[in-house]
Image 1 (cartoon, rainbow, N blue to C red):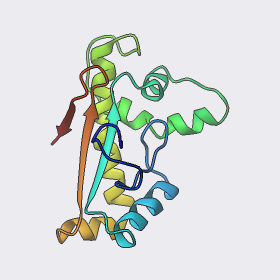
Image 2 (cartoon, rainbow, N blue to C red):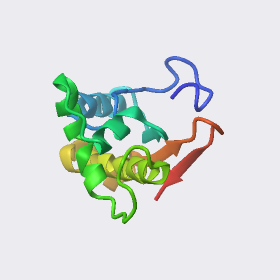
Image 3 (tube, one colour):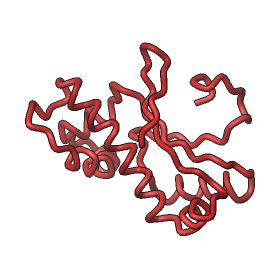
Image 4 (cartoon, helix red, strand yellow):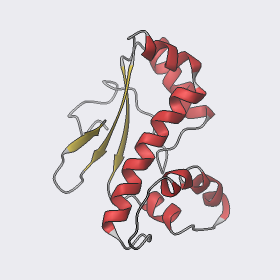
Length: 142
């Protein structure tokens, strides 16, 4: 995140997890970042070609990765696509990446009444984007 936006360590409050999903720890970190550290923006940022998304698309089963990927699977299932629904299809992977960002934003609002209320009254903004690792461009999603 720091590299993407040319920020230094400590300039932004960052929480990372493979697959960019929300759990209790991530929500607690976001609430801390807003209420204690004063963050005004929550950015759900995913990069294209994400290995965790590709593994969720292919329904990989392996140790604790299985449970992690189950949190990404709704983003796969939410994509209406008639073509090849595998990780080899770059178009489908991109669509799932975007779906996962939107799903994560919904989960933040649904599972954190604190952040939802702060967004409703304009004290925090929750936005999503996809980072193109080849071009360095972030495309923000509606």
